[in-house]
Image (cartoon, rainbow over all chains, first blue to last red; front, top):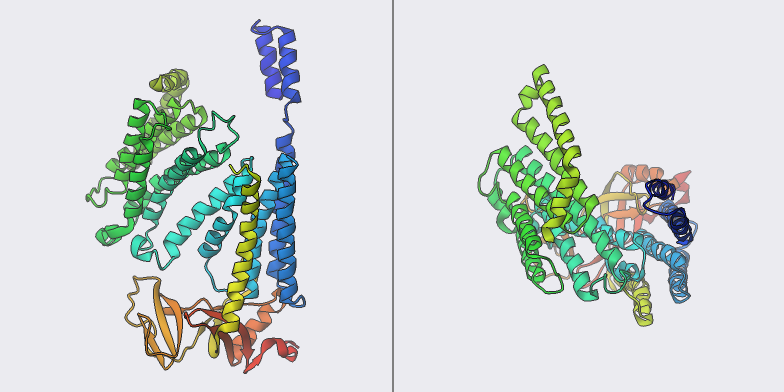
Amino acid sequence: MLRLKKKLATWVSHSLLTPEQAKNISLFESSQSNTSWVIRGFLLLGVIVINIGIISVIAANWQNIPNFVKLFNNFFLLNLLAGGVYYAWQKKKPILSEVLIVFVMLFCLASIGLISQIYHTGGELYQALMLWSIITAGVAAISKGFFAPFIWVTGFLFAVIFTSLDSPFLFPIFHNNFASVIMMIPLLSTLMAMGCRLKWGNPVQDNGENNKNYRKALKIWTLFSGIVALCVSETRFLMLEISDPNLIYSNSLIPSYILAVFLLGLGLLPIFDYKKIQKFLLLTALGFYLLSFHLPLLEVKSKIIYALVTLVVLAVMALFLASLKQRRWFQFFLFALGLRFWVLYLQALGGLAATGVGLIVSGVLILSVTGICYRYHRQITNWAEELSA
Amino acid sequence: MIQTKKGVLIALIIPIVGWILLVAYKKHILSTGVEVTRPITAYDPRDLLSGHYLTYTVNYGVEDICKGVSIYYRKKTTYVCLKPPKFSLKWPNSCELVIRGVCNRGTFRAGIERYYVPKEEAKKLERLVRSNKASITFSVNKAGQAQVKDLLINGISWKKQKNLFK
């Protein structure tokens, strides 16, 4: 609000707005539910703290309370909370509804912990997370806020990672290969986001209330896990020496191929109204992303080639995001690109950088690149955004 | 995304049904399975989600357990026949009582290698388990799934031996 007031004052001083208009804008913005996100944030924090408390109480494993009493109370509370969610949803109380949804979701995790304690289940973390993801998917889908879908998407993707790595049934596919599993995650979350849009339509056409937050949560994880996957593809194959790549590659990349095929198929559907240039950018990013995980199979040993492939993916994704007018994400990818360039410089001239001359060159390089970015960032952004025009 | 009354009700009922099914499944194994007691060797109690527990390896009295499973193959589903004692990579047909598990780095694990204990008594119990003859009682159903029932110290349930903690 303070920022808006400063901007309004600037615009008034430059005669872009009349004082009357500035006052009206200020009044309008004040009347919006600006404080709700603060209240919502504190309420959600309270819910998280309460659930951590519940988990701690369960963890204490009070022997004096009989198991059936623990289970009965747990079941009663779960029903009470579910009833509360329904009440809040019916009475159209968005904040209460969101808070209770998050409560139910976290309480389900605590309940799984309690049941595993009472029955001394020797289950793995992935099993608990996967079960939690399955039973709470619908609950998160009731939410119109961002936090519940974000918690669910985070839990689900971690469940997929741990299941792929730990499940004996998936071992013949993934061979406990972390790189192949992490490679699959951005593809999976993109496919899920596309699936949301396909199933529930275009959020722009229904005032963005339908599935915007699910897609936002999935987008965050797609981009974040994509960058993590690129880091893993470089570090795992370069830093660690894998004795028999053929053994690892035998099956572990198949799930990613399948997901990539689905992505390409879905991308061709008319609901995804991407321009030709955007499709080209996505295809290029996908192609180079997949290539980065195949370089060891192609027996590429040069670190520079690995770096170049990563740089292409980052640059193309930055352009794609700019073409969607996603300025923050564009700048984030631009930053990642700059960072990778810097690491590439250290990789190529590592010895030189350790010397006094190397440090001077590095400093000049940083200043130059920063200066160029600062001088031309608006032009670069505008150019990238106009790609799809 | 879910906006109809029916959809909301179904979404809220799913975790409740999931809870009931999970508890019923655990109860079912306990009530229908065959009770077995086997000695254990315990080590290292700790957990973040569900509190303190004892971890142990169960002595099934079977020789060459997990033999023939590559160490590279981290979690291979395998079977231990308890009557007569035998290890098998496939479901043993001529066996009265089978327990299903995975071979993980040469150790057979059937999901019964945890026993949750109260926080205050975790350390004492760990010491007791290490220094006495400890065993667990578990239930095995026809599908080979096992469920822990009790922890025994010198053949008696630890819950019935309050004098052990004095």
